[in-house]
Image 1 (cartoon, protein in one colour):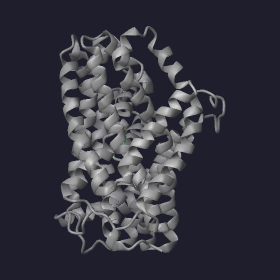
Image 2 (cartoon, protein in one colour):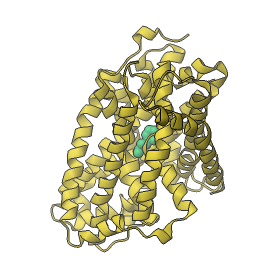
Image 3 (cartoon, helix red, strand yellow):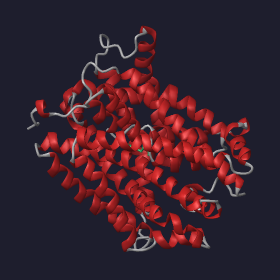
Image 4 (tube, helix red, strand yellow):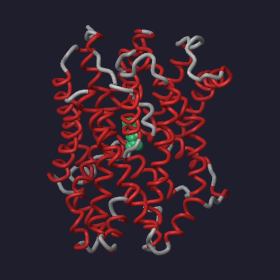
Length: 438
Ligand code: PHE
């Protein structure tokens, strides 16, 4: 039995919705994933392609999720069911994806907390690669930090949409903005900072290839939190009269500016210290600490940077866990507090073996991947595009939006519907097939 709709929470204002959704979008994806994927895929040219994809392609499933949430005013399971009870499985797909993504996202969140605590002692380290490996291959410490990070997320969820989620975002997002601007200024003042800017902003068109396109599309989906039911769930707490096209635009612009500024913070520093920009996932945990250790006031800069990462990861983590929590509350008619406690137990249990992917379970591989890599790969390359395709198909084909204009312009509205019905599903199929082969 569904819980009484009158008890359903809603955002206290449109601003609360926008800042919380921006909080969901801006996360490890912007600061950890974006710079290293861009570093590996040719810098400036990747950035151009990414911007085009974000604006013209990924905005469409973003809007589709928002529409489905706002119209149904239900959690992801209820939203799909309200269109056709046979679609319940699509909602479950979101529940499974969010549980899977959280069990590796929170592992990285745990690493961030650990590095916050180590900010002022980074200059005592000699081999940063070894230091990182030693930490993640430990048994108890990484598990403890993962659970601690999860606990903080659950705390805000437990307090509810207004008292918890909104409050967290209203405090942490401005703090995040200020930290980022300060760190960008520090980085731009380093010697040879212009080399990093050149890497980011002067494109080499010969580097374009198909794999870069896919990487850009995958990153664009990940960063906008699309394909998890997160945007749908946040959209469902909107009041019926709220304008979504404008909000979607604001969210996209904020997320993109943030990703670019994260690059402007990281690349000048990397080039200034003569390091390589394409070191992959370790950029943030190995390359940057090495830079902080050599910098003036490096401890303080490191502290600022890891706090920035922490706030970004936390506000996204909260939005991920809210998806299954909303389902539990409304589908099984239990209290938010109980639902939050149950999710703490489930995600906590699952994240233990994922954390151990770097130690005791290092050799436990499925399809040649450790659990950490498997969860990362399956969610970003398969589940997110599959669910993005589904939401476009369902909203495009099953909802009658003829009287419910998303855009004021009729032409824009028709283009949007056409893209949702035909173009996006085809694009996603290509993405999924190539993803599976990769
Ligand atoms: N958008 C978040 C980031 O950039 C990650 C995320 C994915 C959050 C899916 C929610 C859902 O880190």
